[in-house]
Length: 375
Image (cartoon, rainbow, N blue to C red):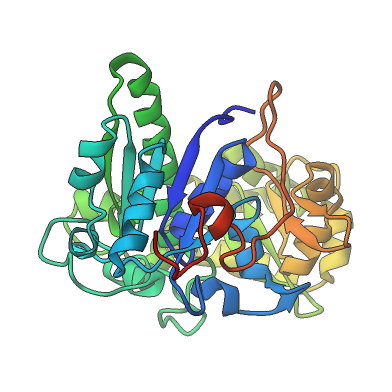
């Protein structure tokens, strides 16, 4: 596998860092998950559990080793430092300044292991006025402006459907680590990555910043093409109170659908771009979609060259034959479901290790002692 031979020491908890290191484990890296004594990673206790582990924890920590280290204990910290001497990657997600106090900051580790790639993931980064503010995904999405454009039917901000800031940071850190490891091949030296959840999320907005950068104003979400200002990029209710979407605004798709409905006279509204002038087109399509059930529309659209999709719930999505064919839902020998591998190589493909470490299960094997024993 692509990362065979790479050793990762991961002190992060919750989601961004663990998801990042799990992707590395899926592709061959040895990932040593360092957890605090007591309850360990909070993800072990969030949500429904099965076979001794929560779904949350299992799908962010499979294939890793777990060691328990009390970083406030000098002997245990020294054992961790010795482990880092042989590591390729170190990941932490404490609030800025904490690793310095604990004695596991980049300068300390790099002095011992100059080839180490060290990644810090935090809400707002290691610099700037907000660096010390505590925040999880929702607060970061709010401060990044993302919640302001995520409106419900009542035009009020709604809870985001996915942890976008967490996952954006995970992927940015993953890419940065890969670049640093590649560069290390030429220089022999590692590097330090300062990954901000807010930076990562805001970098995901290039397609919606026209009003912000050009007109210097916040967008009006329901007038913008991405958030409902276009009749052909919008959610519609069906007769059975389910929903479908039109998900492509190219004029060829507009003509294809309106031609089927015998209303090519409405094409001109779409040609003028998104905005309130499309309201008659929105109303016409809403009335059409209200005449059939979601299942009937799925059958009606089959074979037509039009950007259309039913709104599925998550159970339906994971049961979809295409998702199963792509092995994005995989089932282990115990019958437990897991998220599959999204990075698919032809040569040296990743491989899921379904094992999930119990808290501290590998402390003795990795550090040569039990947690709390010292040296």
